Amino acid sequence: MRVIREQSVTAFADLVLPWLLRDPVRNNVAAQQVQGRVDGTMPTEDGALWLLIEDAGHLASIALRTPPNALLLTAAVPEAITALTDWCLENEPRLPGVNGPIAESDAFAQQWGERTGAAVELVMGNRMFRLDRVIHPQGVRGQARLATADDRELLVSWATAFHHEATPQWPMLDYELLIDRKLGGDHLWVWVDGEPVSMLWTNPAISGVVRLSGVFTPPEHRGHGYAGGCVAAVSQHELDTRAFACSLYTDLANPTSNKIYQSLGYEPVMDARQWGFTYAD
Image (cartoon, rainbow, N blue to C red; front, side, top):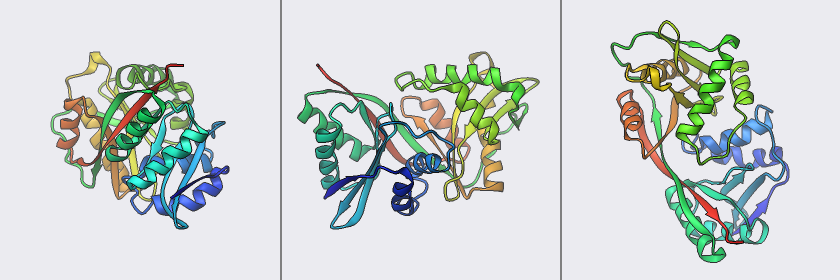
């Protein structure tokens, strides 16, 4: 096994997207990270890592890092994880963490802690879900609509609140920029019951799979099924217009959201973990 760092994200995309899109559901996040930087919908950060893991000249796995985020892994055999750990120890000895499928992320985190002395802490456990057919909830007041520029200020505040509530351990994003991009691409939705009461955003379709994220209802509007109604309506829209499947991630520590999404027709696909690394010096 050997690890090769590709300097150009465009060249990296040409090499890895066919491999990733053999399973566009499980590899949706990695494929989105690559494609978004090729087409300019996401910025290419200084110091980004685009890593190929080859076995006898054949692509065995890939990994990537978009600072300040953790290293993102894809499915890999143990030998590939060891080769990746070796490369990172030599070239990126202060990684902030690792994220990916449980077997791969756990193996990397264990090796990293043993070989660097870094403290290894579980940041979050996630479950990926897939939906092929929507089960619509009954009795939810209101309807979904695309967000508009008039909603911008409210949705920036909601997106920031979503970060503090759902992912406080992750690096803070520029939510004004994110909301502007989602508005410009018709990827931002609100559920309206007299006024906006819930939101979510979608990501561009990757090989017929659309991933939903940012599902948020402010506390004063909870308990009415708005989030479930919004997820169901937007999922149906995506299936009707551009996707053969939808996906989303949940926090395994939040049993309520896991239960809600399954009631809408989302089915578990795989679990993932993110580990954080802290160094003594």
